[in-house]
Image (cartoon, rainbow, N blue to C red):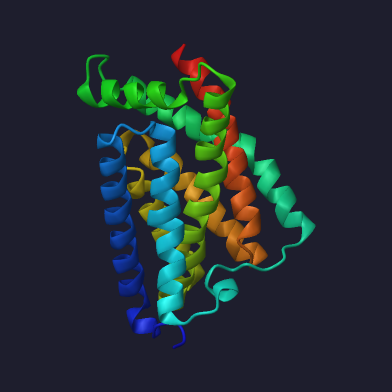
Length: 227
């Protein structure tokens, strides 16, 4: 079958989003209870709950994979846009997160919980820990999240209301997916820019690159903030 009719594509996108969130949370919880490292848990949950689910649903809807995820060549300018925006995006997002966090009391349960999660996730004692952190936060996150949010969901949303509303909606869903009220604004900003990259390039590849670079900068910046 072709893409869902425009009148129902937004509903399909929301159902897929809800299903992906449910699978992701369930897998993360089960793997954490099993005692797996948080980085391994993230990789497995994202590969199965985001990438695997997206690929399976596309097969079920009989949509060509390249079309569903915008897997097309992009021009060099769009890769330059991806690389050039990484530092400004992370700087802006980091400043927002810092400002929001500072508004919370130091003994705030939300602040303490989020800082504890970050500290645990970025803690590296060996080169293997550093490699796992890089694979989980940079490679896996960039690929799996882009396939779902700027690939399948963005394509479904734009069939209903055009690019502008699809960019806004996908950014909101992306921010909510992180389940962290402190990063809603900065993550939404990053999500919107990544969606704009897909719109302008007609390709998912620049967004994957930009997402990976953004996370790479955060990966080496966050330990400095919490040391």
